[in-house]
Length: 426
Length: 133
Image (cartoon, rainbow over all chains, first blue to last red; front, top):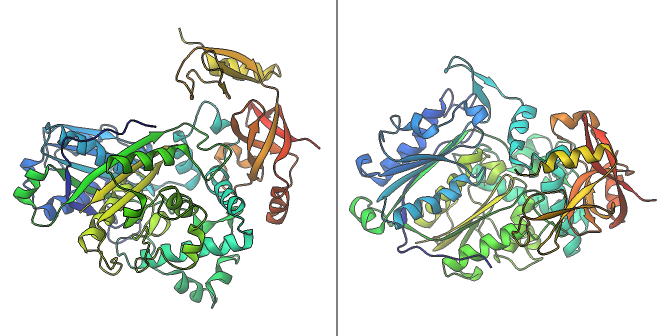
């Protein structure tokens, strides 16, 4: 059992910010923004919403994963004046795709220690394109190159050179493992994955900041299909690695997210709304492979969920809202069971019944996940913290959970592989 | 000085030898060789040849392999449980990956006996596994 630990006092999240997720080459809301400007947009939303005087922010932590595309090192020094936080303590940090989930715990420790009163955490990632020698001219990055750089996150001594195949290792085998373990026939499993995707799209279509703005029904109709299951199994949705179809995987996008973590006492002085409290968190790391004989039962995730929940003194039955990492949508099933949100072997039925929708009794991933909202590596987890906070405050317009969640658990995988779990309470 | 473990592993492959390491303290077997023990945390290791025997647990074939493996696409990639304990992922020879029907049919036969071999892939000697008929 991991050491659980505790904070001397529980810090709170006040202001949150998030940009539209899309492409700085084509998406109107963020078109033409540089890394600095995109990061500022999320940070200023958080600062303005919080109503905090920037002079009171004692430190900022900025997350970014693929430095090759950003053309940046020392992001924190280059952002200090842009953010209006010149001469403040700052760090660039990263745990890959879980970065801005990890940032909650990091900042909470900084505040609970008494060193900082208020900390701004932000994440920014541009994956569509890289700057040229001219900072306002960008060139598109092709998927092969993007993944060449991304895979620097995977065991470069051995595994990567042994015919590494992420779609199979991270998607296909866990899906096969789940179906085999619980006796779900493969054709039925395909229906389940369609139901998971339907929920992804209902949520992203209701979220203006999400990359994909249409439901699965709308896309199917446009393609001439009356039935979404028929559309799902058609040539329009080929296999990425059997049994995983293309629509069960992430969309890489550009975006930024931010939040402010303060002591309770400080928050009272500037924040007019009810802040959300950081109750618990835990992180685990492992080199490849991420699982052994059972692709659905990872030590990484089990340990992180259990330890974060023990730190927060909550049980699985206390979770009102769950967000899990879904670069591959099979993890909505595997991780909701690992968190205890559903019983082992029960999640697939819950998805077929629509129980995880915002209007269902077990809401999950209401921002649209990594396909619908889109995946901007170091910024995505912060977008999920943003979503959890908005849901808890009753501000998730168009996809609001009826009874605002009191306890939320947010999980992320950071390639490859870091698990971060954070427990929030209002 | 730290032992050059990665170099020893790959240079041994050229001689047809596939090494793992065994933790001197808790006897946990580690493959491929690493400096620290994932089980007990100790860092004194003993080099051991692997038997090469294993069981294929699951496999599939991805349509987006890294650039360096693009010319081998489609290839079978799977999880092997070595006789010595560790689970290792690599290319599997002797499987049909031309259709999803074939991949599905063969996955019903798991676990399948496989044997390790050294193969040159993308300019390097690596360890792959072959189905034992």
